[in-house]
Length: 429
Image (cartoon, rainbow, N blue to C red; front, side, top):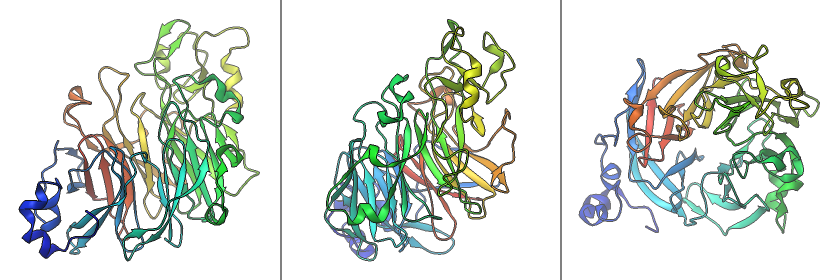
């Protein structure tokens, strides 16, 4: 639909609209929408479906007018959802396709003034002039090219709140073990910094590898954010599949998925700035008890992949940046967002494919104090589960799979589920 529909016109045209728009009933009333797969909700929290019928929703954000922008990875592009906020309840007033581009698959962010929207495909970052009041975009402008065209396809974008002229652009590996990423020049398994102003004013696109290297050795770190009180940058990483150690299959519980700390974005002298986080040679233990040749390995300790011996020793991993926390293997963290006061970070775990029984498929909370997690680096319980599936043995086919997170201006948390095409409002945060 090319323009917003009024609530009145939705009521008049409800029968026609529902044939084309699966969430039309959610738009015309604040009636309760039943979740496709009901989540199990932790005590003190609530979960309500805001909208359904979406095409694989991934990255999300709110604009300056309180509109929710959603990247639909299922070929639709970017959707703009205008909300009706009654104070105690929120529902969809109108919904439309803002950008029609089937190549867009995850990354999205807005400049501090809310006037430029950045989105990404597997190979390219684009910018659009954006008018939140009108709910419109200008012409597409190609700003970054040369992102790897193989392997993990999502390219996360994150514009710093503390340093609003800096945008991070992430690229994952092109395979489970991408040996070429030991060199930063590969342009993969890393994140680079670009100037928002330079991208916005340039008359021609820049190559990805011209950006300033912020971190490397990250297999596929999809979620990026800043802790609001300190400005510390954090990411969540999807680690290795099918792991063996000295010929022994240890992949069910190893390696762990990682919560990584990257320091403050503009502190080029910090130990984390430009650091190597280990991949593809060093990975973090989640269950050290099943690792052969274990010499003091704990949860979170980095160890070498493959056969130990010669120059391939765990000692070589001591020069890599270890994770701050280590989550269960194959849980696939997708996004991370902090509360406004920095006392907690919420993480979506989309869930495993390389593990039996399945794991992940949940929204969890990591507690923070003074800019760092409360739990120690070797904690076996780094997070508190908030939303879970009732039976993970039915996953992935009969589960909700959390992806993008977004806070609105009233500090309400929204969570997308790509497998069920829904966005939830999470209460109690």
